[in-house]
Structure formats: structure tokens, C-alpha cells
Image (tube, rainbow, N blue to C red; front, side, top):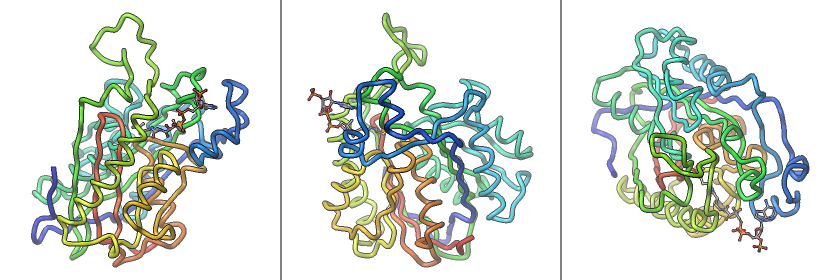
Length: 331
Ligand code: ACO
């Protein structure tokens, strides 16, 4: 799916917040659980540490402060929201949705609230969906949360996945603005590659030996990731009549520094325009892009007028890009 913003329907991000669990787990600690080393992890992924949720925490507990911060930045209360989407593959439980749980905790009594599952691409799908509902006049103020506690579904004895992921959440408020905002989206999925990154036994399909942990063919996902990060970005830029030279801030999914560097080089974007925080958080799945947005705002790169390109990719296999003319003043 590819499309540009509707004429006269300017929708932008007016609030931004993020939250990560308190506990920092450095690479050295992981070598207590599996045969690995800080050197291997840093060299192959660029990751130094990640946050891991406490046993008492569920996704909604981590997402709630992020959502509150985003609302506060936008100058809104929970009751002002009429659409709440939570992008996640690790909801508190299958149902009620974490969207409904969060809506209750925020006092968003008039909001349509639900979860959206598309792996690490979930946040990109969710903001496209929220944009569509706002542009069509179905909703007026949306809260979109992206977050995961992937530590809950990892096999802590599998070194090929354990070292890659971390827990965290981010949230954005979307509202109509006088100008600027989202310019276009490109989203896609290739189910034929789905079994390269999957969670067998987590749904209605019965498996003989499912242990309900993430399984990944790292090399295949690596090839897919480098391919779609470049193609999706190029497609959305072309459809919006922009080039990579116009992009001020590039926010790729934070899976692996090597994947990001590969995409950056192929796209031809200078490294100072690229946001990287995978070294501190690992791959936080649906939380990755909003956490990176929050970092880019904190370091002063997100200012009104800047052209921001975001691309997510992950389980599905799926991918999604958005181009936005930033309108929000820094907090
Ligand atoms: N520590 C030490 N050695 C390891 C580890 C580890 N944690 N993991 C694997 N190895 C070993 C392997 O067993 C292998 O050993 P061998 O040569 O004796 O067989 C060797 O290291 C090399 O393994 P490769 O898999 O070839 O390593 P590669 O350079 O491909 O890096 C990695 C692996 C980091 C997983 C890479 O393939 C990757 O980043 N893939 C993409 C993963 C990704 O982005 N996933 C998330 C997608 S988003 C989502 O939706 C969740």
C-alpha cells in the first residue's frame, strides 16, 4: 500500500513520550545465561545494553507513563482522545486488549481502543491507520502507543535471539494541524517469509513441539531487513516527490547497527542525520521507532520544518515507512 496525504488533511504528531523499565542488562550479564560475549554482541549488532521489565510489570505499566507524557506534551487529557491504538506483540493478555486497559487507566472513556499486531512494524501500521481515521473525520485526537516486553517471549537459553531484544514503549498524539504533518506512507507484508521470524504456539494453530518462544532465522531476516529498509524508503520518497537529500532526520527500525549502516549507505544519507539508540535499548520491537523519535527530540534534531523519514520492518514479514514534515516545537 502506498499513498500520499489527502489535500487539506494535515495531521501531525503533537505529543511524544517514552518509557523504559528501570533494570539495565548489559551484555556481560547475558553471558551468564548463554555462551556469548560483550565483544560478539557489540561487533555483530552494536548493542551494549537493554532494559528488561520487572516480573511485576506488564506492557500497560510501561506504556502508561509514555502515554501520559505524550498527552501532557500535546496539552491534552485522556478524556480528549477518541482513538487509542496499541501496537504490540506482547499485550498484557490476549484480551481485554491493552488498548482498552490503557484507555481505562487514562480516563479515555470516549475512545475506540484496540491492539494492532505487526511485529516491529506495528507502530508504523498504527500511525498510518490513525492518520487515515483522522483524515477521514472519524476521529479527532488519536493516541498511538508502540511497545513490547519481548523479554517475556524470548528463550533465555537461545543466544541467537536473547542478545538482540529489549523492553520499552513510546507514544505519540496525532491531531489535525494547520499545515505540514504526514506527507505519505508505504506499507507492506510478505507472509511467505513469515516463518523466518515467528512465535509458534501463540495462537490457534496447534504445534506438536511449540514452546512459545521467538524463533528466528537471523540471516534471512538480515537480508530481508536490508532490502526493505532501502526499497520502502525510496518508494515513499518518490511518491511524495522528495529525494533522500531532502530528509533531515532518518529513523530506521532499531534492530542492529549493521542493518542500519547498510541501509544508510545504500540510501546515501549522511550518518549525522540517522538516529541510532539500539546500543542502549536493543531491539524493542513496536517500541523502537517512538523511542528513537523521543531521542531525536531530546537531542534537538526534531524541530518544526524538518523532514523526517521513518521505516520499520519485522515479523510478518512486514514493513512500513512514513514521511512527515515535523510541526511540533521541542518540549
Ligand atoms: N554469541 C556468540 N556467538 C553467537 C551468538 C551469540 N549471541 N549468536 C550466534 N552466534 C554464533 C553462531 O552460532 C555462528 O557460529 P558458527 O559460525 O560456529 O556456526 C556465528 O556466531 C555466526 O552466526 P551468524 O548467524 O552467521 O551471525 P550474523 O553475523 O548473521 O549475526 C544476527 C547474527 C546478529 C542475528 C544477524 O543475522 C541479524 O541481526 N539478523 C537480523 C535480526 C533482526 O533484525 N531481527 C529482528 C527483526 S524485527 C522484529 O520484528 C522482531
